[in-house]
Length: 116
Length: 113
Image (cartoon, rainbow over all chains, first blue to last red; front, top):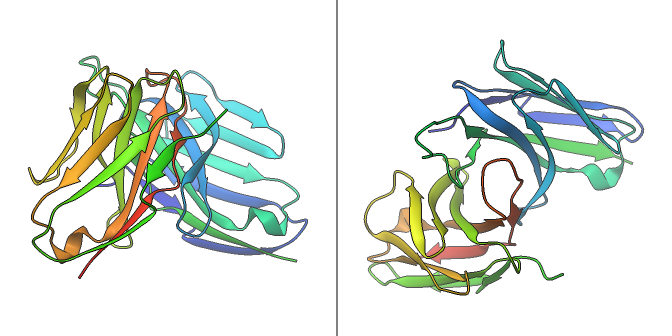
């Protein structure tokens, strides 16, 4: 079963606008990661935020993490048509037993469409 | 440097057959994970290998198995294929530990007819 939910399920914007996607999860995490997927191909790692971090930036990407609310958001500024893709948040669970090795738990994803 | 390589890219099999998918991780990456992606269930974790040992396994039936070789290359096998096994199978490699991101291959699209 999925760890959490992503919101919205689909987002349609014009080039130059900002896009914000939200992700909620259910259990304690070690870190949260965002991935992009173009048309059913492989996932591309965008950014990772650790559970003790609140905000992280990478180029036009800004990620926030609120562990008290078990939620994260991904902001893409000045969107481009090339940003059109599905975006997934994925969590690595915090487990002292180590059973979270290699296991990403994904949300259902947000489909972003950026119109030229 | 080369990315994660998955072969084959596309595969069509008949119900009841078995299939083997291959994944070559990034050089130096010893952790290899496998995921199944379907429109209905989304991305689901299958298993993870590190140094030829399975460290973690998802909730899939025993028909799904995998292994890792000494050069970190990994294979997954699905026996007695069912129509519901039609999916995009993705492999990911990592340096290890949950603190790092994962690099995914382009996937193998399996269609069971």
